[in-house]
Image 1 (tube, helix red, strand yellow):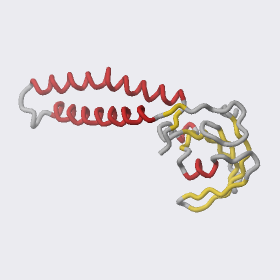
Image 2: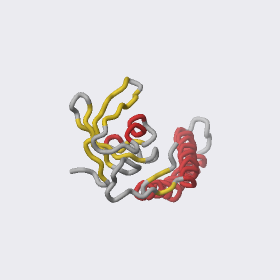
Image 3: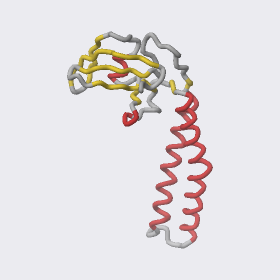
Length: 157
């Protein structure tokens, strides 16, 4: 797993950690304490749910702590000549469909806004290639040939 992240992505993870630690966890702890004060815990849904939610928060905090220790902020080249971390890549598929993705680390994946992991089959196939390269992407559903039409440090309009 790649340990690279953008400065924006790192801030987002730090904000999530702070929110969980300073806001969400104390609120759930108070709710569990209040529910426990009501007596019989075995049939107390608020207590049972609160304890479950507390385990989920603690698990997420542990994961974030471990990731934040190893993540390194990557710089994005101003005028990239080849595809690297953080670049926006536009390519045309064999079907004629055009796609545009930013290559990011696994902590920033969000396909709905065009962010894919550099560790994914598509990300690996694109890495270190240039405009006008034709490449084969090996996917679980079968091989796909794409033609790279653009590389940019900013999202194309």
